[in-house]
Image (cartoon, rainbow, N blue to C red; front, top):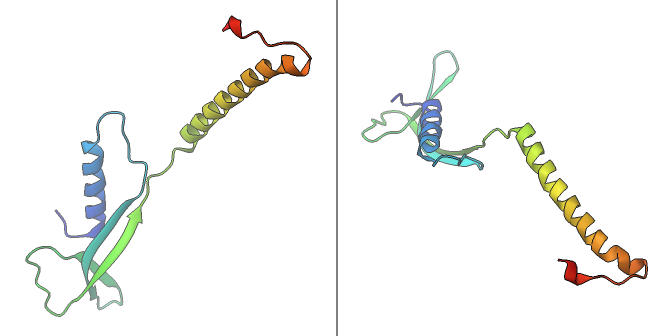
Length: 114
């Protein structure tokens, strides 16, 4: 495995997804906390590598970084689910209204019909 952050993230998420039972998905953030070594390059850039067991520290600065990655929300799927929940709520509200409407019209409610 390459000793870089992008590979760590990719392999971790892939491993988590493969380990999930069928029908399950990652729905929340995944937090990472890693130790890294930073090296300045001669061109003014910076190289960041993960610290692994047996790494030689030499003249490097070791730091801890913490970050989160979040799944991309399928907006269409979320909207469909929210709409279904809203439709269910409206259906229940209509059923309650139908049950109490006769009371406002001065009629008695017959509970034996259920």
